Figure 1 (cartoon, rainbow, N blue to C red):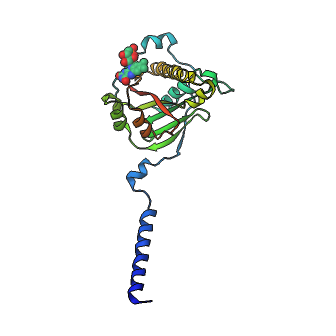
Figure 2 (spheres, rainbow, N blue to C red):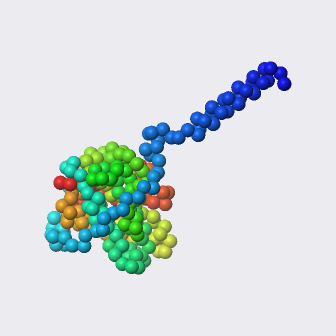
Figure 3 (cartoon, helix red, strand yellow):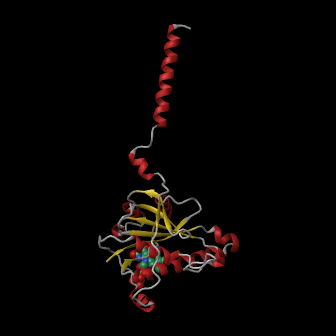
Length: 235
Ligand SMILES: Cc1cc2nc3c(=O)[nH]c(=O)nc-3n(C[C@H](O)[C@H](O)[C@H](O)COP(=O)(O)O)c2cc1C
C-alpha cells in the first residue's frame, strides 16, 4: 500500500471516529430538559368531607382570570384531579359519568407553583392515584401563547388540561361518540370547577387555544386531543 493511501485511510478513520463520538454524546442541558421522563408522584388521598355545601359551591362558582403567587399544595392538586376523574367504584366507575363506561378522557396537569413538586407536565393515573411526569420544565409562557395570549394564564399555579381519545368512544358508538366525548368533558370540567370553589381556589375554563401547539407542548400521543385547559391558582 502506498504512503498516500495509508494517510487517506487513517484520515477517513479519524473522521469516522469523531463523527461517531459526536452522535453518541448525551443531549445537552437544553434538550435534556425536554426529554420525556417517567418520574411518578404519589398523590395524597382525597378528602371526602368539606365545610361547604354543594349549593354554596354552585352559588360561588365564577370565572376568575388572575391568581396570587401563593403556591398550591399537592393535596389540592390531588383533590382536583380526583374530582375530575377519580375512581369511586370497584368496577372502575368514576366521579364523572362516561358513555358506555368507555372513559375517553385523560387529565394532564402542568405544574408551575406547587409546594414540593418540580415544574413540568404530568399525566394523572387514577388507578394508582399518582401523576407521572411526561415532560420537565417551565411551560407557562408557551401555553399562554398557545391560549391566544390570554396573559393571566401564566400566573396559574397549575393548569389542568383535559384531553380525549375519541376512538375509545367512537369505536363503540360511531360518529355519535364524538358528541358523547364532548358531553363528558363538560361533566369533568364542572366537577373540577366546583371542587375548586370548595378549596377556595380561582380558575377559568378555556376553550380558545391552538390544539396542535398544546398537544406538542404537553407531549401528548397522536391519539389524544386537548379539549379544555383550566388554569388554577390561589386568590
Ligand atoms: C366552552 C367554553 C369556553 C370558554 N373559553 C374561555 C376562554 O378561552 N377564555 C376565557 O377567559 N373564558 C372562557 N370561558 C369562560 C366564559 O367566558 C365564562 O364562563 C362566562 O364569561 C360566564 O362567566 P362565569 O363563568 O363567571 O359565570 C369559556 C367557557 C366555556 C363554557
